[in-house]
Length: 401
Image 1 (cartoon, rainbow, N blue to C red):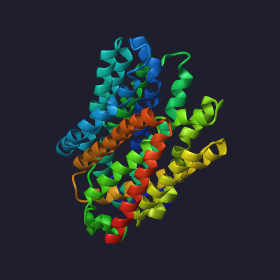
Image 2: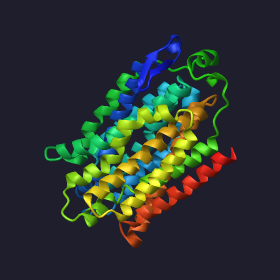
Image 3: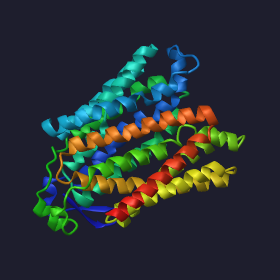
């Protein structure tokens, strides 16, 4: 296990041999980053991939965009239970190798049905979110686990920012479709690195109590219903603004170039990368307050999108949304660490991924309907209302406990 010496710094404790060292946690984060790279970087280019597969107008891009998410949600609970039974390291390796196989099939596909099957397999055989977090939760507890989960979210945010840029830069030399073949190397390399790591075992409660927050070894598990409800609501209220943001920016700021629009899209995720460590330190003992504040800032940021008609206004709106994103995601990591205490981590994080992906799918579907009926600003308004309602309910929950 590791202990926290200062904000953002992990040092090894005498119990580290039974858990994971700082270096090992960072290795897991690096593997999660490379696994997320292709999964997050290539879907935005589906409209460029599909014409060569027979869908000349790219009509199926919206559906195929969420296919991996849907099947990842369906498979996550099963893989989580199998991880608890057969070993978290084995199932994490399975997830990385599953991505490798699916990326190879996607890159080699020469028809729309074959490509669709590859995306289905990517979702079902992947599931690196649940597998990675289950692996960590089997070795770490308390603040060490919540900090590690915060780091994993940072890996995903970094991939979300960097991957589309790299895919676009490579496109003149290699089509996004065939880049799947190259990207298959990334999860394969991650599997090779993970094979060198130990099968995790959670430290005993006595050691944890001495090295972690006072009383952590004896604390009761956190409530699962609260965690799952907040996870779904937070994913829904944030993701719903993503699909049509570029369209909204182009409507409000005629003539804006793609680079500026891309930077605006990335701003909230950059905020997370810059401030997540400090926010974790501040909210470690008050995650429910952090969740409520997160929803409030998300609602404020989305509302600002609705009235933004200048570049400066959009930048401000995106930064405010980034503050909400950071507060909410970090607080959810702390709540997840609380809930994992004393529970089978594979099953819990498998269910959590099912809930999270369900929120993302619901957000995408509602965004599509709202955009079709009322325009690109409608998903923003819907997300604002959802965040306000969630913030009110979270505050009521805090007062009743």
